[in-house]
Structure formats: C-alpha cells, structure tokens
Image 1 (cartoon, rainbow, N blue to C red):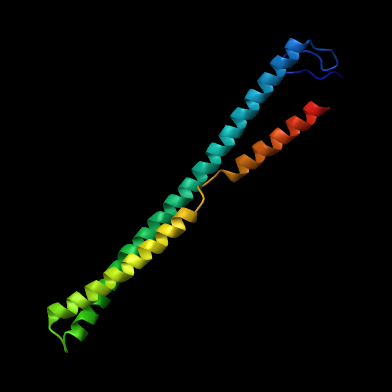
Image 2 (image 1 turned 90 degrees about the horizontal axis):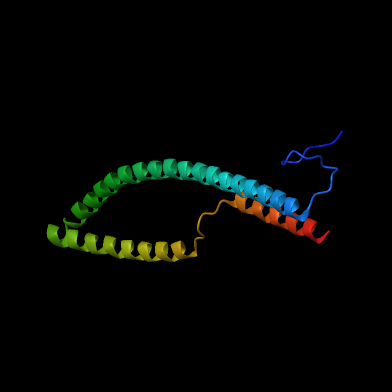
Length: 139
C-alpha cells in the first residue's frame, strides 16, 4: 500500500527537484509554526506561575512590612528611655537605611548574574530538529 505525501502523490513515485523543494519548504514551515506554538504555550505557563508567585510574595511582604514597623517602633521606644525620642528614631532610621543599601547592592549584583527566562523545551526541540535535518541532508 502506497503512502501519500502532503501533495497527494504516492511516496514510491519519484519527485522532481522542484517538488522536493516545495515539500521541504512546506514541512519546515509546519515545523517552525509548531515550535513557535510550543514556545508560546511554555512561556504562557511560566508567566502564569510567575504571576501567582509574585502576588503571594507581594502579599507576604506587605504584611511583613507592618510587622517590621511595629518592631522598629518598639526599638525606638526602648532606646528613647536613655536618649531623646528624636535621636533614637534618627539612629534606628540610619541603621535601617544602611541595611537597605547593602541589600539593594547585593540584589543588583545577583540580578546581573541571572539569565533571562528561556523556553527550554522549545529550544531543545528546535536543536534536535536542526540536528536531524543536518543528519538527513548528509545522507
């Protein structure tokens, strides 16, 4: 039983060079569209997951901010028993800004080392497709 090619011809028939080029172009076009669709699906899934994670982190950080403000007020009140209240607040504020500066510098250096998010499955699939095409072209 003969298999039909996308052009509707029997696979056992010989094709002209023009027909072969047309078939390759059609197949490459379908392959590229499928790979792009895979990359789009993979990235949209990653984006949804990142959005949920960011929302949870933001909510937790917002609540933690209020807790930290209460602790800072406690430290200022404790220091104000031996110093004036404005001086205690100034000392605590300067210490907090120093810690914030160090954390920002560390975060910036880590961000520079981070790689951009990539659709790894789609990239691997394209690489294997290219290798397969090269292998078949050498035959």
